[in-house]
Structure formats: C-alpha cells, structure tokens
Amino acid sequence: MIGMNKECDGKCDSCLEANECTDPRKERYEEEQRLKLKMSKIVHKIAVISGKGGVGKSTVTVNLATAFAMHGHANYVGILDADIHGPSVPKMLNLKGQRLQTSSMGVFPVIGPLGIKVVSMDFLLPSDETPVIWRGPLKMKAIQQFLSDITWGELEFLFIDLPPGTGDEPLSVMQLIPNMDGAIIVTIPSEVSQVVVKKAVTFARQLGVPIIGVIENMSGFVCPKCGAEVNIFKVGGGQKIADDLSVPFLGSIPIDPEICSDSDNGMPFIIEHANSSATKAFMEIVNKIKRFLKHEERIESMPKTELT
Amino acid sequence: MIGMNKECDGKCDSCLEANECTDPRKERYEEEQRLKLKMSKIVHKIAVISGKGGVGKSTVTVNLATAFAMHGHANYVGILDADIHGPSVPKMLNLKGQRLQTSSMGVFPVIGPLGIKVVSMDFLLPSDETPVIWRGPLKMKAIQQFLSDITWGELEFLFIDLPPGTGDEPLSVMQLIPNMDGAIIVTIPSEVSQVVVKKAVTFARQLGVPIIGVIENMSGFVCPKCGAEVNIFKVGGGQKIADDLSVPFLGSIPIDPEICSDSDNGMPFIIEHANSSATKAFMEIVNKIKRFLKHEERIESMPKTELT
Image 1 (cartoon, each protein chain N blue to C red):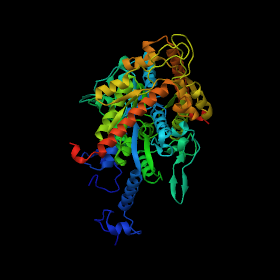
Image 2: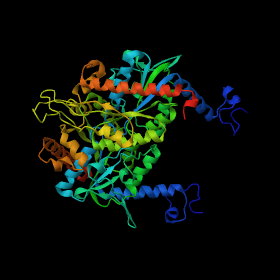
Image 3: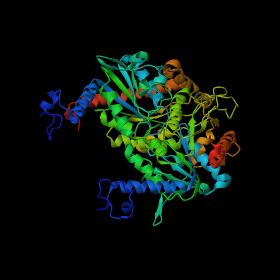
Image 4: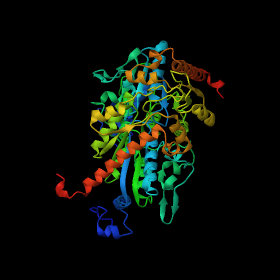
C-alpha cells in the first residue's frame, strides 16, 4: 500500500501523488520542497550574525533593509527576525502589536515602512512579557515554517537577523536556506566581543557560507557638548578581527545616542538622522555590500570555462 | 538479570549495587545523584539572566563574585559560565588559556583571583576562533556535567552567568539546580532591551525561581572632559521593568569606559577602579543582594508554625 512500503523515501511518484500517504518522510519532503520554492523567488539572502549579543545586529539589519528599500527596491525587501527568544525587529520598525495575516491564500508577512516584509516571533506572542521557553527542536521547526510556510512572494533581498551564538537558530538558518549569498558579521570593538565574534566567522566558514565582511558597531563616541572623543568600547576591534581572520572589513558605525532613541521610536536612523555621521558611515557600508553582491553576480554569470 | 528487567527504573537496590548494569536509566539516576550531592555543598546558588545579549551579564557576574570574595568569602565563591557559545568570564578574570585540571580525584575548576573557582566552556576549546556548533541536547548535557562532574567543593556562593534568551541553557540550569536562591535580571535602559528582558522575568517566575531584582547597566554617561550628561542608552528602563512587573529594583551602573578596559584587561572594575561612581553604585547593589539572602535565611530558619 502506498506509504506503507518500508523502503519508501517519501519521494516516490506514488507517495507524492497519494493524498492518503501517512509516511512522516512525505511531510518532511513536501516541506523541503515548499521551502526551496519559496526561497527560489528571493534573489539575495543575507544573514546578519555576531556570536555575541547586544552588538547591534538588529539595528544593522533594520537599517540595511531600509537602505536597500529606499534605493530602488521598495516592496522587494524582507526581514526574517530569527531571534525566537528576543525578537526586536518589530519594535525597531514601529510594528509592535501587528499580527501575521492569514487568508485562504496563505500566511503573509507584516508590511513595514517602504513595503519591507517582516516575519518575527513577536507577531505571534500575546504580550511583551511572554517568554518563548523552547528548546532547540521547536525553534528549528518554527524557523523552518517561517521560511517554508510564509508567503514571502518575489523579493530582491531577504535579510535574516540571527540571535547570538552558534547554536540551534543560526545553524538551522544556515542549513535550511539554499544558496545563501553570505553573512555579515557585527561586533563592538571590545576585546571581550572580539573573542566571541571570531567564533561566528569560523562558524559561517565551516558551514560554507561566504563572509561578506565585518561591521564594527558602537565604535568611538564624540561628546555632543564639547566634541571630546571618548572610546567607551574602544575602537579598531572590527578591523582587527578582519585582519586576523582575513575577511573584508566593511566599516565602523560610531556610538550615537540618537540611534538608541530611533530604535526605541521605531524609526531606522538612516531615515530619521539622514545627515548624521552614523548614517554616512552606514551608507558606505551599504555600498560595499552592494559591490559584493554585484561581484558575486558577475562571477555567477561567467561561462563555466572561465571559472578555474 | 540485573538491569535487564523492563520494569527497572534504574533506582532499585540491585541496579545501584551492580557494576554490570547497562540500563541507561541507571547512568542518568547516578548523574542526578552526583549533581544533587555537589549542589548540596553550595550554600547560595544565584543565576544572572537577561533575555537580551550584550547588556553586561558577565560583567555583573564577575564583579558580584569578586565583591563577595573580597568581603569575607575568599576561596568560597564560584562562577559557572553557562554561555556555551560565547563564554567571556575567563577573559574578564584574566584566565584565558587555562584548562580544567583533571586528576584521580576528579575534574577541578580553574582558580581565579581571590580563589574564585571558575568553570567555562572556554577552558575546553583549542582557540578563540573555535565555535561550539551544538544544538540544544548537547548543550544541556555539557551544563549537566559542569554541575555534576566538576569538583566544586564547599562553596558559599555559586554565580551562574547565563547566555541570552530563554532557551536550552537557561532552561537546563533552572531545571537542574535544586533550591536556587534566585535570579538577578540585567538590562540596559533602552525600550528595545526592556521588551526582551521582561520575558526573562516571566521565564524565571514560570520556573518558580525567585527574582532577586533588576540591575540597570550602561545607565547614563558623564563626559569625562566636560561633565555633560549624555544618555546613550537612556536611563530609567530598569526601574520601569521593576515597577511594571512588581519586582525589586537593585540599582543602576553608569556607562564608564574604564569598565570596558578593565574587562578586556581581565580585572574586575570594583578592584581596579574602587573609587569610581560605577563601583559605588555596584556595591550598593551588592548590599541589597546580601539583604535578600539574609532575609531568605531568616525565613528558612523560622519554625514552620510561624510561616503561614
């Protein structure tokens, strides 16, 4: 009987045609197919990782997505907030209290400013106080469903904001998404952060994901009253990681109290403080990322004989 | 045959006496017993949690342990660095490159300044770049072994530095350690942090662990040149969480570039900058924690009839 064959791998024609097949491998196979189909409609898939928490991954993700949406890709940018325990993208895009929309056509992301499509655990929780007390397998399942069961539609860019560490969530994302363009590594300058963030670089390498480069966040501070430079978390740590591990350095974003306020107010700082030195530094980083993606396209479009 | 009995729960006399028993439940039971025995020799067990990364959990843990060791408990304080992916306690106590010591008597913690006993994943890794790419069950196992198989000895205080989130590691620690005194919650003032840290409070409550209180780290900044107050991450967020969730507020630690340098240099700031305003603020927090523990002792030592 269909699906009862012990040799069935869930991929045989009879399995796939049969609605009555109960083999759990069939469900897994179908989920994989849905995920591949969804992801095939997204041109660029970029992970933002760090290894260490609180270095500004979500701030970088939100402002990156905004930068690409502002410059020619409105309505074609998405963010997957893959931090199951501490989702903060919705707060930073003023989308708190929104819910994923379900219809007979599927489950749809929440639409943020500039048509940015956002999916986050936060859209499924009853309140801010509600913790998600889940072990790894459940988190893996949630991320898989975010990728395979959400109607992302046609996108130019999907930015994936990963939680700290090199455990279940980052591992799931890296393993589940086919043809990831690369990973952006975020750090703060301190040596304590460098130690932990270096692990993230090795992590991406071991999983075969290209490193787009390192961003140093919270780099230096200029007193707005007297102009004195105070290096609260030091400077130069990002460049040092890049040098030590031979990966590109994308740039530094200075500490700016406005960035914290903008995040709290749900406004990307590159819109709210377009002329700040933080925004200027950030836009240079964006240009380097664009060049990486263009270069990548060039390599991919080369005839195979040219690639040796 | 011993251990082959299908009804065997690994706890029967014959199982426990038999060396040849191969029932996996026997191993689990013995591990649980070792853990209980080890933990019974530690008077106070305190978790430092946050929900959000990069708020200063490890800085708080290291300085708390130092404060208790300095004031009457030298050689009787321990730190379990339960951040498997991003261990930073060894760097902050100048213990990088050390290894757990193994002898016929057992596996021993690394001894830090003031005799603080430290156990961290970092002591098992070949280099800083090595990531621990483990999913939940392996992490649970590692933490269990840190608690049950390390010869902690007699301790007055064990501080457990937990990674961000409310997933595998925090859950394992909270479930594994019997009679935890309570959890200290660390946040930075920003609203984005508050949203995530509130989840940690609910998490501890749901697991029946008392909340000792909330610490606000990186609270306000005074320019060392001109004395201007600049609220980089705002102020008052810790007090707000405490008020909103009816838990004690322990105090605020200001932003101080020396704290970052001290951490990078492996020196607790309360020793290196004993007269700074950060140290003064921190010592007030320590006194509140001491009062909590004394009060707890008073309640525990009351005759049962007085407790209604």
